[in-house]
Length: 567
Picture 1: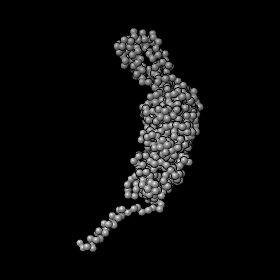
Picture 2: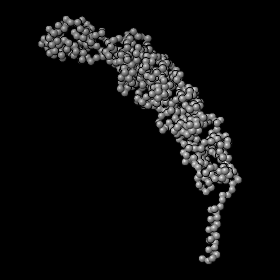
Picture 3: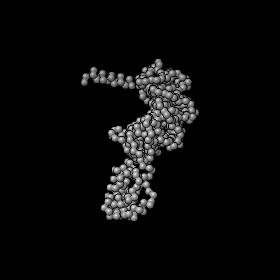
Picture 4: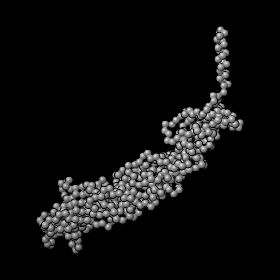
């Protein structure tokens, strides 16, 4: 290496040493370098604002002389009120929450020629790495930003209302300090009576169920200068992201919204009626909790007797069959403060909404309703107990659901009146009817198929509707008789029956004789029953000792007794 090159290297080393020992370049004013700026800046620091910020204080060579991080707490101070060195007072103005600045302050705007004890020498340039966490002003009130409003808002929160809501609580820099969502349960409280911090008391007023809003409050309306002693520092602004799920007032009664009311309503439910209805049950925010439709059967109960929750007991009074209504029930008329977890889950203090459809109702004192829709001019012979009748019917439930029809089978339904061959209500509806007459019957369940109904066809406790037409009738025998003589009884009855003259009547002889009398018009069997079964019972009653034959002695003994279906 030549001497010139060696000299240049030596010169470079001297320059480097000189640069290291050179004093800082003098500053005439503060220098601000924005090292991070948040995308959104809802508010910038102004003179008179109160701020909370973290900082690292350094000399230009990087040596740290102070740090709020080391103390584990923010620096909290008013801006522009000479509570800070002048350079910092000026540097904080215009900052946004979560903004980070590197601030360089000349000595004349810091601690000047005196310095600060042993910590800051005289005429020191100071560097501060500042992160703003919070800003508020003593004149601030609650700030509300509604970012979702439901389409239908029938009611808003007022003072003394009881509300259920979810929330996320954060500091102004976004630090989460609490959330009802993480606890999987709403926060439930009265509003406006001091049960909440003042800012939340104010911020909830005017909300609708389903509304979402951000409520921002200064510490004076939050936890003040001391914080909550745990997650919320003193002098902290609070931000609550709130969704309102429920509200009511202890003075509330039930609310009824009639959605469909039939044009023809002949009767409305009263206390003591038994009612069958379908329902969908939800909370006020629309959360579903139960449905009778999902079980594919109605809910059946007495009303006005305390068998259901108070609000439903009240809401089912005055309904028509086929009516649809919405019943809104406050918790004190529902499941109260405890809610329920039996069968379905309803949180405590929840308002309930039931969309109901009335299928039918009746009263235990109801009788069969009979209305004649057509009666022929010649209507003299009327049906009575014991008559054999043939009729057509269409059967349905009160809500119009089809059950059955004889017209579908192309043949009549045939019964003997008074023989318990149909439900009592139908038997009553067929009495005193003439051929060709048509009737409309309404049969309560206790005169129909009762609480059990007919599996797959008729629900339990269902009111039945029958439209009937009497097609044919055969007059029955007097009450209690299964066979009668049309002519005088032969004095030689036993001899006539004993075809083989062996002084005993076998079952075949007895049957042949009775059938011959019926065919010749001399006798008559009860219509609608099995002729052979009647004759068999008659023979058994004559056969005193049960040996399969009737002797003349047995025949005489039975003849001395009073009986309707024997000889």
